[in-house]
Image 1 (cartoon, rainbow, N blue to C red):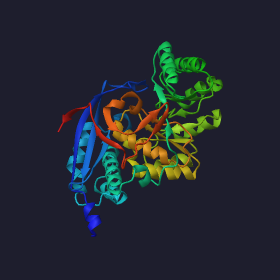
Image 2 (tube, one colour):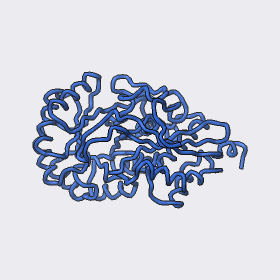
Image 3 (spheres, rainbow, N blue to C red):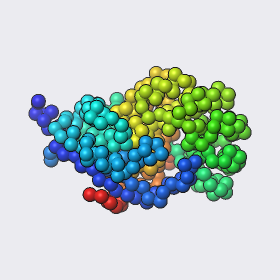
Image 4 (cartoon, rainbow, N blue to C red):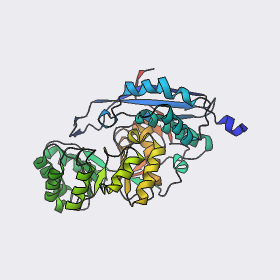
Length: 371
């Protein structure tokens, strides 16, 4: 092994759980969001050199993982397997972890993000360079409003637009009639120049989704996100054919194989990328490539992550080959003081830091609940 490769060897890795108050409490078809969010933070180092930071912010409804189970599998299996590996050989490391213990995508995501951060710092390049290079200087951000009384949702939407955001995401999926009313009133309030997308979180069946979209046709929605259960590819395809509305696959998309299945079923126009589903950046890039071959754009979604996950999402969004849509990297708007970072928000445009790796120095203002 060359001296340079020796310098890149992983010497140690550790994980802990931290918590923070939820700044973006959204009521969805799953119910009301908790007031406190746990985050599993992974740190990976090579001797006395830089430290790579990654995270997994669990969504049990998506992957059946919780913060304690993620921490357990990291400590029992994955972290020890990193010792002595070349931190820049991320693809090989992640493939070996999958063979060692399949599944656990959120746990793997925390490691994958930490390795990309560490490799970027070692090589002196931003994470976007490791992903093939940025194709744009910044990305646009969307803001979200949960299910709630019409007056409250409209007021929130108007505040988002007044703050300079031109894309709104409205949660639906509980009551079709109320969903239609709420979306129509928001559209009337914000005017035709604002992009609106809706997210049912699997809350409809195909007939209900078609009914809702028929009554929202003149609202000129960008797309509907996961209108039906994740397994119902035929239903998603049927909605697309009948309504002509674009469909974003979220809960239905975890792996590259899922992407291929959705394309074959003609079930999706867009792919939602969340690292806890894709096991990090490595497989997310595979999904992006599959989507590009089929003309499918991707939306990077980081609704509840800290700056660690959201910054990695920013770098991925910067490299997307199509990249027409605004992304959902919420924490940079709602809790900018939570981290030390050079990432900059200007209106609805998010710019990366002029620093190697993800560009996040450290997370502050959080409570460590497990060592």
